[in-house]
Image 1: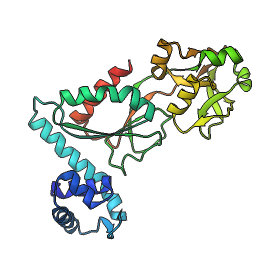
Image 2: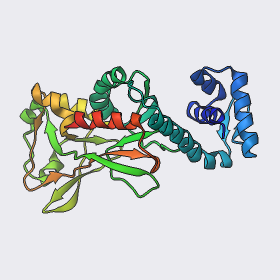
Image 3: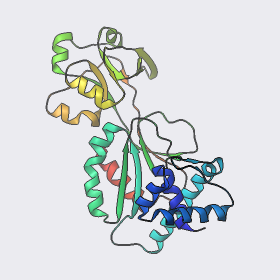
Image 4: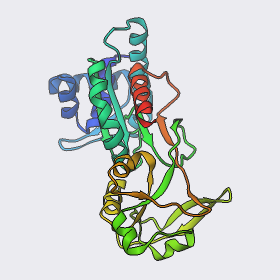
Length: 290
């Protein structure tokens, strides 16, 4: 199967248009259209519903997408195995990660990764939503969440201990809660539409209802609110390293209870070979979390 047609197909899915695929692959629009048409003729199916303004996968295109990704990645793995280069990892690495984790722990390593691997390119999607990594053609998702059973492959990277934190100004005005029952009388900052905090008490999980006048769709929002003294927040240790060092936040221990930990996971689309570009990224990222 012609890899040029596969690359056009995959890039059209990722960019949402043939013109976007042409731009990314540095091809003329006519060449892009011809390569896609040749692939469709070879397969005997239509991969896209196409109009002058929109591009959408057909059911057959959706079914073919994971196979196309795997074929291209397998070819890349074969080239890397047969013709290793001193330049390190090569190709485009597509990563999605939560906003705050990406900003604080991934962005600081990007410059070093690109310097060490001149033929590597990185496309980082910072998104607190759970992106469909198969449909979007993502190589790797970094997630901090309970993982549901699926066809995806997950690798645990590191534990992610959490504590409750507050600004000194908040504690001076409101005092510190001592027990989980005391949280009822405090501003507990959290995600939008979240109404409970999860704790481990006597080895068992316990859900505690909390509320506040401010919530946010992302960690950055209630982290900033916590620093400004608006309330308490459950945050990861890596998330508040700078704030603890400069004194803008303090830990608030709760007697007999600890926030439930959610590990940091690397999630892959399938059990295919881990490419050099994935390996170098994960090695450096994992070290940055220690």
